[in-house]
Length: 240
Image (cartoon, rainbow, N blue to C red; front, side, top):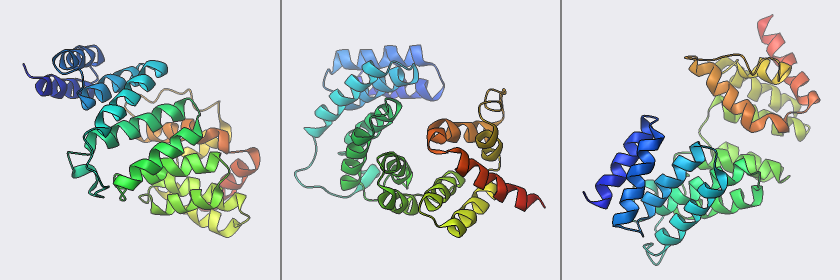
């Protein structure tokens, strides 16, 4: 079997949650082609999902270094659909995700800014959302707000924009952003207001709750008591 076929099977097993099988296929792909960047990305993804961050980090760095060798001489701005740069973009995204778990926000910023240099669309807004998180934690609020504005308009983006508006003393803008967010994902509000008493509740099969919990897990450290109370007031006013 070719290295590419082994790699494809690895990604299929990741989609099905079969991480042990995925690991085996990615390792076989690398035995056949030790320099295959996306097989390194795949193996790193397995370790990231297992929470083995140091190994994931090393594999993503290896994938980026290998993918860099195949990059065109000039940035082509063609984005994710360009197969010649896709392994590089995937490596940068995975590296940023791992570094965010390690709370190394400067590294997250650097990885995502490099990704945007090749893909100005930011993987359909996903990158701008993550970049906003990094800028916020680095205290670069204006840049964080700009990044969120470039991100796709989801409830998660609106919750984060509202928080930035509140920190910038733009209370009415915060209330408008949170009103939009609550209409689309109200489950975030009790998690933020009563965390951690609500978060551990089982959410098996409840994708809306799981989505809200993922947001809170990512952002909870940014929401102080004042912000949670302000959000609560908006939520209460919508119920009246």
